Length: 252
Image (cartoon, rainbow, N blue to C red; front, side):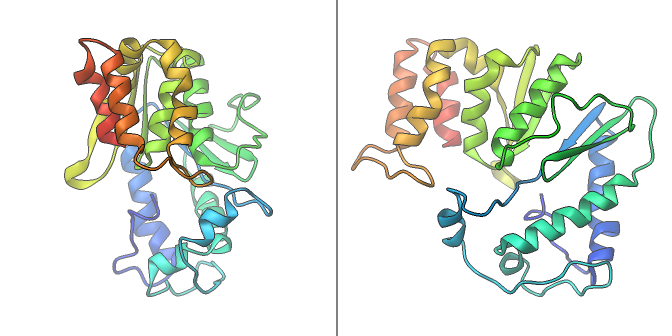
């Protein structure tokens, strides 16, 4: 979200939070009964460190209400400490969200989770050792489904989340699981429940392994055998239902 919600005319982090980020969250919360905001964590000595180093470097900045917004937003977000500080600041902003009847808000901070209203049960969500928001999103989707939500939507621009959602759909007891995928002209809703029904549980649970050995942050792909070829072969195995399975290919 912070990559998509650029500062625009905001001059300080306080202005960014109050005029851009918070209104976006309030707008999304107004259309749903429950909203989960899940951040990445950046642990030292993580397997992800090398991949993150390749994304670029920038200058470390302190994030306070009066701190001027950096001119290069992308460079600012390339520094893990900057993102952690920003996430913590935005968490504090959301922690002061007023309670609304029939609305639930969950926000992560490190291994912990805040809920509004505050009396919500967090035993299944906090503390949480998941470093990546990709997998932690699945945990929150499962928690929502187990607490009576029949339709769950995960917003992401990452194909990893699509694969994880398919692999874990059998553990998420909701009637419909959707991925709100992409931005702008590429935005679309992916019906995880329909694709999982076509593929079957056996094929869904092996998707993460297939996805990993065809190239990921810590694994190189085989020469000439990338994700698209493997996913197309998987679609052919579905016999007659390949049109639905190709949604996975298109996401990749």
